[in-house]
Structures are given as structure tokens and as C-alpha cells.
Image (cartoon, rainbow, N blue to C red; front, side, top):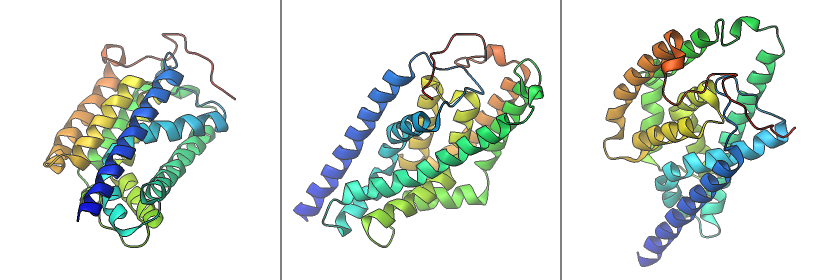
Length: 244
């Protein structure tokens, strides 16, 4: 029993330390880079580096309960193996988002310019993410995220939990892409929402609240984007050049 408690404590400490380090690196690398909706994602190598760091900062604390369970089943490097599997899934999500971004920008999408249809497109995505909060798939994924047990070794447990987490929080992360994936403000807002749903005792009860908030935010962005607090309008401020 004492050994299991020590392993669980070590797991929590390692994940929290990883998240703190992730936030430190993210803040250092992304300060001044928020160009608002449609922020260019830069070269694939640079993007992957910052994406993995960002997801570690935002998501590792929410995965602590599942990682502690995995630590009871695996004797050798359970936290490292679980984290590797978990972040591998989120890396796949990030690669898919990058591919979609590159595909969309390869076409003539002048109508998506911020002074044309951009705010409406962003608003639709945010509203859709809010409505997803009320779907059976969201409820199932959130329930699986909070129940934590997965079979297999720590790495496979991390993969399974990562898939559940994408089903639970993928729409919230899509909102981050829409509002400005380099925005530290919106990153913190989304991270708090995900932590609230996945970790707090009454987390699932917040899903309808977040749904209503996102629907309202989507309408606000579509109708009056310039008045949305924390939203950087494209072209309104200089941003640092990203790696290629």
C-alpha cells in the first residue's frame, strides 16, 4: 500500500512538473506571436515542437488520475510510458489540424478574410464546439476520461486515455485554433475548461455551462469580433516570425 501511494505521488509530481515546464517554454516561445484567428502555423518541425509543448502544458494535469492508475500496474517507467502514449495521440490530433490548415490555405479562400466572412466562419466553429458539449459522444468520452481504468501496459493505457481525451476535449482545442492557436490567453481559458470538466468532482455538470458560453461566444465573434476581450484581430498587431 505504501509503495503504491508513493508511486501515485511521484506520478502526480512528474506530470505537474512537466506541465509547469511546458508552460514556461510555451510562454517564452509564444510571447508576441498571437496574430488572432488564422494565425499561420509555420513550418511543420517548428509547429510540432510548440504543439507538443503546448499540449503537455495544458493536458498533463488532467491526465494525472489515469496516469496514477497506470503506475499501479507497471513497474518500469510507468509515468514516462503513459505520457508517451498520451502525447502521441494528441500529436496525431495536432498533425491532423496542421494538415487541414494547409489544405484550406492552399485554395483561394479570400472570402475567409477577417474583413469578409472570417468572423462568421470562426463563429460557426465555436458554436459547433459548444453544441458538441451536449452530445452523447461528448458525455461518453468525458465519463471514460474520468473513470480512468484502462487495460494493458502503461503505454497502451496512455494511448487509450489519449483517445478518450480527444473525444472529450478535441472540440475545445478546435476553438483554440479558431481564436488564435498562439494566444496564451485563450490557451489558459481552454486549459481551465478542460481541467474543470475532467478533474473537478462535479466537472460534468459544467458541460452545459460551457456549451452555452461557447454558443454565446461564437455569436459574439461573428457579430462584433472587435469587442471580444482577449481576441486579437488579424492584422491589428505585429507578430514575431515563426520557424520554417
